[in-house]
Amino acid sequence: MGLEEIPPDISLLSQLESFDVSENRISKIDNLLNNSNLRCLYLQNNIMEGVPFEILRLDNMVELNLSHNRLKGLTPG
Image (cartoon, rainbow, N blue to C red; front, side):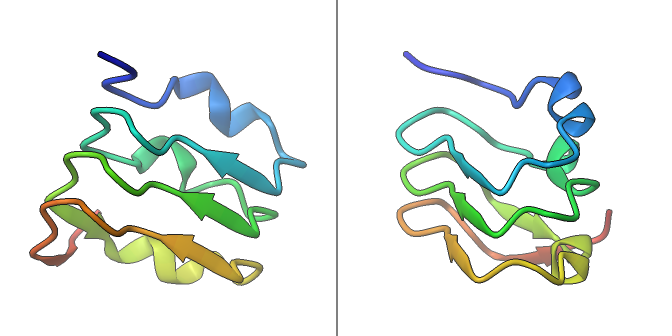
């Protein structure tokens, strides 16, 4: 069945640059929004309906895959 949420402790990994949680049941990514070194984030094939506006503040992000979700747009954090 896969992950249903991103563990809160992920925000403690301050040097995290790439994170792949594709093919799961993730609906929220709030726990990733403080990982300022994140460059690549793979979230395809999950059940996300919205993406927090704060994701735009991740200045180092060069690759973001949100395909095959239930996205309707950006959401307030």
